[in-house]
Amino acid sequence: MAPSVERSFTAASTLEEAMAARRQGAAVLAGGTWMMRDPLRGVDLPGAVVALHRIPALSKVDIEPDHVVIGAAVTHAVLGRALHGAAGFEGLVAAAEGAANPGIRRIATVGGNLCALDFAAADLAPALLVCEATVELETVEGPKLLGISDFLKDRHALLTEAIVTRIHVRRDLVASAHIRLPLRKAGDYPVAIVSLAVDKDKRCRIAVGSVEPVARRWTALEQAMAAGPASALDPERTAELALEHNDFQGRDGKEVEGWYRRQVLPPLVKRGVAALLKTEGLA
Amino acid sequence: MTVTFQLNGEDCRFHGDPMTPLVDILRQERFLTGTKAVCREGFCGACTVHVDDEAVPSCLRPVGLVQGCAVTTIEGLSSGNQPLHPLQAAFEAADAVQCGMCFPGMVMSLSAFVRDNPHASRPEIKAAMVGNICRCTGYERIVDAVADCLDQARKAGQLVGGIHV
Ligand SMILES: Cc1cc2nc3c(=O)[nH]c(=O)nc-3n(C[C@H](O)[C@H](O)[C@H](O)COP(=O)(O)OP(=O)(O)OC[C@H]3O[C@@H](n4cnc5c(N)ncnc54)[C@H](O)[C@@H]3O)c2cc1C
Ligand code: FES
Ligand code: FES
Image (cartoon, rainbow over all chains, first blue to last red; front, side, top):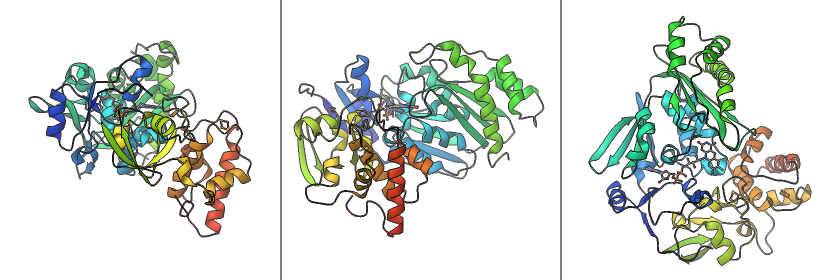
């Protein structure tokens, strides 16, 4: 066991208490499934932490007729159960229910998944990108709302003092899907992830995770698809477009090289469109 | 910092670093060595315990987060002269255990699963085992034993785990 360390540990019961600890330099501790492995990555655990699990408002999913609000401390397991069967959220549910393994999903949180800096393979990032989610942060200046693309791009700077509190998602999707490619059948990090969604205007949104260091929308492919006939959501044709408009720079990793992550995208897109066509909203 | 929680039904008090992984306290302070620390990364499942009745990896659980919780380890599932948990009995009957390294974690994950999913199908049993790696058995015997255990419980009209989980 590690030698006894004087570490400050605050289990905040309100957001104000959590922000006060944050202002004094405490790092946010959510499920700990990322942070507890810091020592294995050669990084010391923070000297002060503030845990969010006792703040009721951050641990619930509110489902309203036109939008959903997800607390940052909601676990993958709870998110999957809460949205199971909700039309349009098939992709987000598949991401929450397919990431990691059951034990991790019971403790790893939505906030932790989006805030683990330098973690490229976060499943919820592309799934929430196609939902065009808004991230709510509590900052020293008060609450702040940001589109998820901007949040993911700027999170290094944003998270020096802030706490992610909630994720807001509109219910404007007809269907969505989440396709991941792990090297084993399940249980390890996905080599590449493709999330897809179709909105009420029949426009297709596509996002890719794990291929580049930060997940992003595949706008080149979305535009190419929008240029074609609106009714033509065809797996083969979309895979051809994906091959033509593949503008990703795959990151090298110990599990696979970058070219491989890039190369698997068209077949994953094909699977994704096939999955979309099987959903209730499009079948 | 002092952290208090229930451990196998008894009060447990820990003084020290709140970021200490629960598995280290179980093994090194409480000598409950049934819980194994193998990968320490959340991948193998050998360290699985129940925290408030949910199966979670104790290597990634800082003890500060279990303040006020009820922790059950493999030793607490069935101890002394009590009958084995039905799942343990099923594994024994099927001679499913080889080196035994993975089994405490396997039993802790699957005992919670059969309690919550008395009608689970074979693919559902396999999905529940994704986080428990076994290097010896090839898994099929374990899946067979879980399926048998559920079958018998259904026939007996009894929910698995209702006995003493
Ligand atoms: C075995 C294993 C397999 C995995 N497989 C996958 C997988 O397939 N897909 C996948 O997506 N992930 C996977 N992961 C990663 C896992 O999803 C992340 O580790 C997890 O989501 C992080 O959540 P957490 O609540 O445990 O975060 P923590 O470890 O508590 O925190 C992670 C980081 O985020 C910060 N943070 C947390 N919450 C907030 C907040 N609300 N505001 C500001 N900062 C915050 C923390 O300070 C820390 O820096 C896996 C992890 C393990 C251990
Ligand atoms: S030791 Fe905890 S999951 Fe392997
Ligand atoms: S019996 Fe040896 S690892 Fe499972």
